[in-house]
Length: 262
Image 1 (cartoon, rainbow, N blue to C red):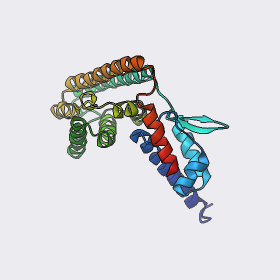
Image 2 (image 1 turned 45 degrees about the vertical axis):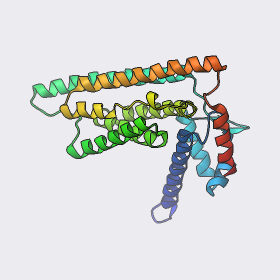
Image 3 (image 1 turned 135 degrees about the horizontal axis):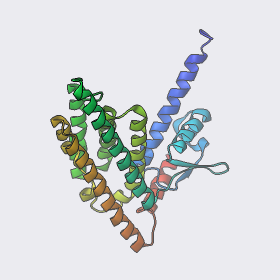
Image 4 (image 1 turned 90 degrees about the vertical axis):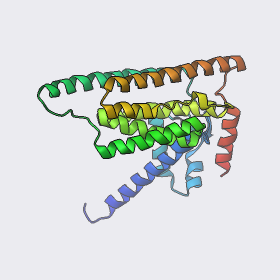
């Protein structure tokens, strides 16, 4: 009922739940919580100085997103994606993006015939924002700076997909991209020189958007997927030669232990 304060409490808990989920997702993306690393609700609650309820809710949310596995008796652990998982995620992204572009072209074609603007377009301010993300992501990729690259790359693709797809498609694509980064991070960090395998074509996509060239934009996305699949082939060969593993699992476990100690 209005005025009883329960609404404010619910909002506060919901906000805390999201903040914890975001913080833990960042820990996983940064590799500080490595693949297979286990932890409990109580450990996370103690670390952040909060009650168990929002922590449990946040962990359930991350499990639903495929980032964590839950065990009734042992708590939670970071999901371990395989090379096959990675390939399927890239393929799923490609299929969805191709469908989005086919729909985009059909819709734009019908509305162009009526002399009306298309339903999805970048205004000037949005395009400036996307270009800024693209420039920072490309710069970080060329420098091999994973910490900077991941954040800008995720924001770049999210803003880009928002302009050409509905919210459900955008969220799905964002989730897949987060999962691919979760797979990639420990392996890239174990590579002495990961920069050749960090795709840096973000600015070319923005250039295609600026020109209104949908085909060029799609071609760049296809090239990005091909680049990532070539990297997956390399990872598979290396892990097969080295006897499997998560491409830096020992380092991931050490980072996870340090995370728990903090």
